[in-house]
Length: 285
Image (cartoon, rainbow, N blue to C red; front, side, top):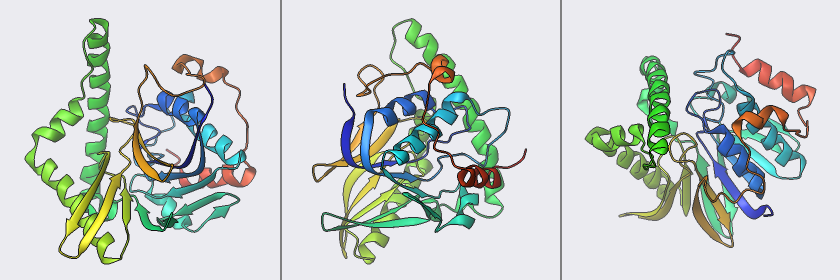
């Protein structure tokens, strides 16, 4: 099967460098598409939880696939998030078809589209609350590992997989209200600034819906994540859709096993400048 040609792909919350990242599936997805524009909408590398002892070959392969797309002519815009907030000191950086920004405004077929990560609305990522959020991130990582062990057992017995993190979120009324508030605030700001579409990440909730207020309406979208939902927003043929990765029928020309990652030849397009850039943003410990 050949690559899928799309105009725009928006990916967020891959959290490379954490146990929860579905890196092999993401590699398969990136190899399956040929986008004109790839928007990386924050929390791509999880610098909050980055540690040298855990950055598997499959996680590095994701970065290589992104640079391979860049080398083949795809324009790539990296929008900073809270887990990769140390990149914000380099906002405005341009290297060929690569651009690093804090937000992006696009005119797509006459529609004014505002794209940003969304952590600006989240008080738990700022000040002293950030310390608690970081500790919570480690607990979330352990939950993901436990969940994977459970799913392996369920798969062995032919049962359907489950997501503990989703169940926890969906059972807590405060979490549901927080998600609703997040979407409403993003929509209200977008309407106030006369955007027709607004795209966020951050909350790991893939969504496309119209939100109306007394001042107008906007199409709110969220690209989801590659931890729980394995989703991407795709724009093609004048239409936005949520792509859900399905390991049984992924539209990938060459599905890759995790154990084979070290054997994969990949186009090396990481220049000395880019290499130095990554060394400066990643913590030494």
